[in-house]
Length: 271
Image (cartoon, rainbow, N blue to C red; front, side):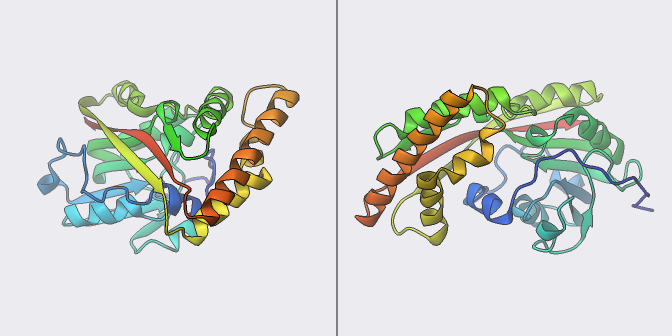
């Protein structure tokens, strides 16, 4: 079966570095593909992971699918870290012919698209059976920290970001409605809690993350996507700098700990 087709190149997805993806996906799927029970993997001969990033989910899928699992991303540097078969492509214009995959899967992709339905319609076009999304609800994320006030500052910052960003970063299980609009029947919606714990011994990326808080660099990267006037955002930035300085001090004594919990929703639908 011919797999590919020619398409125009365009993308409307926000871009992330491999370091960011590795840090935020650390430990994900360590217990297997939770929430995928509705997928009959014995019937899946060919699958595609759209927006694969560094290939965390791709590798897990390849353990369950006997045939090919194609990894797709628009970012060439990210694709270099994934074992073939890999294809450079945009979610809203996939370079594949109709009905060539038994399953189309994505993780933390739709939440970063300004027009997620464009991608879902492409998923439905290239799949002959399953559509699967693993999308976070960032509005429900929680933070626990040994730094006094960090949890509250994180909550207020998250609210400003969720309200201001151009895509629906709190989509989560709402992907089910998108799949239904594309003509698919939703088989299951499962909640998966992804936990990230920062504790001793600290790695270089942990130290760097705290440094970026203390300097305000981390806040400034997302400032333009937050709601609020300049005075309010300046104040929020200074609160983060205070949190970062205290976290750095605690880190020196080996006492800093932080626990982030982000709920992901695994939606499985069938065409």
